[in-house]
Length: 305
Image 1 (cartoon, rainbow, N blue to C red):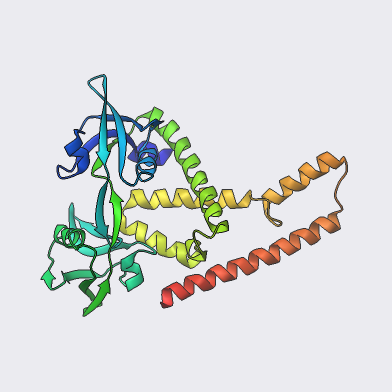
Image 2: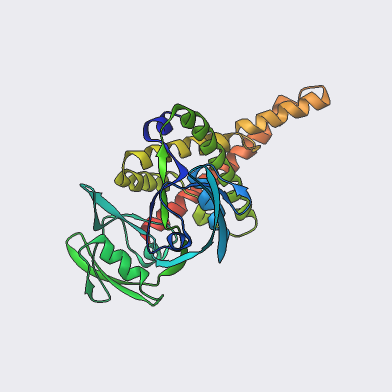
């Protein structure tokens, strides 16, 4: 709640829109308050983006402009990306990388935070806009990226991905009401993401690389710190919610399993033998330790690779 009150939470009122984006061509303008995506109501930026990326070709925006509702049919924006974000210095984005997103082309090719992009396909890049435009205009062909790391010039080939992008940003709301409702919304949003991730892991849509241990978390904290205090505080909040969520899972040795035992005892009308319960918790503890070492091993392999 304190984070949302201090920094605000992104709502659905358009603050900036790229004049080259399809949203602008359809009629969306700064100041428009987005109410619905198709028939789904949206209140925050997370709702907005989640609904937009569900559509591959086109979606309908309902906005409020001067107290009048209007609708726009928006064609999706696609552009080529490699999964990198720049370091910002004195309000200017540089060609040094602040974040290299996990499982994106740049990370798979070996680029790391701190690398400085010098050229792409032989074209010198001195600004972030030049880096971004060279990637976006690549047409999906292999990019030969020259970069500097530890005062050494290196090159790497990266195959960009074609991905949906949103051509506008929304305003930050810093009211007390938004601090209360926004913080609750964000907690629910994070918990929903965790349930979705568990479901995707069960169905095989994502693998063990989606899970991070202590080393992976330290790496994420470092990347968030490079982006600034707000992303760092957001990550800390997410980690705390994540820990609470995991602790309440019905797995032996966690608090969630104790709640299960209490429920079973209530149904049976008598206590479970402490020896049996202790044995079950011991098995759960061994399982959790094995899982922890497995995740730790995966973190180390990621670093070595």
